[in-house]
Length: 154
Image 1 (spheres, one colour):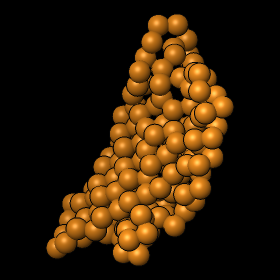
Image 2 (cartoon, one colour):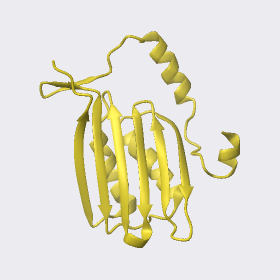
Image 3 (tube, one colour):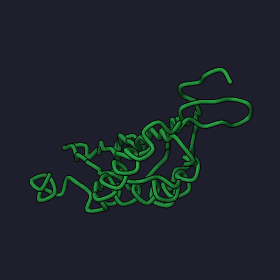
């Protein structure tokens, strides 16, 4: 991981959260982290977010910081992140791995478009991530598709 960090490919945000999450999961090994809401029980909320007419789509460091901030705003625990900058178009692909799942992004600066995938379980609210991302990307159009993953009968 240090080699990736030296290349600027890994977030400098807390990696010790992974140790905390592992310790807690050992203590609560049998705890059920599924969500109960509106009479349904499910693993978590999965948002597919399309950002159109967006800006700032070619700076991996800014995107990393913004997605990490978005994760914290949603109540998630960051384990680590990794981003890759493509050339010649300048697009960025990356992921913030969370104890509660992930936020990933793929950008197309030449189309002013970004596809964001937010999946979170437990008490996190992935919807709270969107305004944080909107501050950086300033999208003219934001389309959100929501799925409840892992639905079970209650």
